[in-house]
Image (cartoon, rainbow, N blue to C red; front, side, top):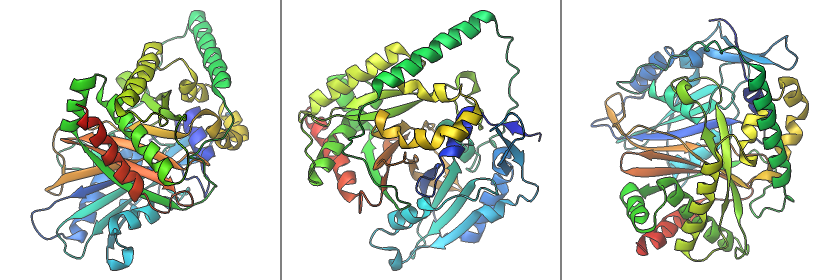
Length: 427
């Protein structure tokens, strides 16, 4: 396959990469097989299917022109099996072996000289289940594209083919004027939205990570929606607002009167939704009302904020800065992304993203998928990031935290359940 240019936004994710800020997404999938687990068979199945996904054969390299650009190229030495590993959990992995191992695993960087992905199969002492851990660099795709890749690894799914880039229609002078006005509007909104970096969830730069897993029954979220209105995403954001409030208080930080500004990524793939490559992102900024003690009022405030965001659309407001980044020449990302990354706390305090999943049951080697927890990269100097994946009758929440800011995530995980129960009690 011919070299494929990375977009300026893709290049930005490459430039943000640091030992203390790896820019890969992750997912922890757990399965419930009917019988004993054969790790060799699982790794062989995954290697065969990964070899059929073109994006996983590709690595990034700098381009000669234009300055600062990068491309994806096929790795002539690619062997899928070299990216797939097996680990058997034991008591040495700690009291919560899956979370302990996954925390160390997510912190490890991906080799820039090879295709930037990794799969690890985890089995346990009882061999009554297994997990698959997937890492994929954000420069290659966004959350929707990552799901398309993951689907190609599972039973009954067609491999995630990389489509050729569509030939754009000729642009008129009016298009250029419209883009210029839109870009100027986003840039102006970003400047106005910047505030002093005094976030209560800021953190020192460190390579260590902690992962946490939380689940919310879909039936409970629907009951809350029926009682108070809003979307399922509104309810989840309100639940997270209450959980973060408790987490701050448990850490000795005053919550009353505060808000935490969340960056809520928005896919703008449109008809390109089936593509696996490249980032097609915008975003909204949503003030999470952690200072509000009343759970119903928290939901009302979140609902109003997200309604305003949606009315404006994903191409307006400071949250649309990924669109702005995609219109900046790659050379400027090479020069300024380090500074821009450190400036993330000026715009938002944490990322809360949702990964779309199908409602149909999924499986690997005949074993049903029971849980799937996604993980989004931590922005530099931020303490926590949240990824949400609705699957079947459960919303799965992946919590990733800076290890120096959170020795463990048990209190935040428990706070998610408590916050949901508070809202459910009012329904």
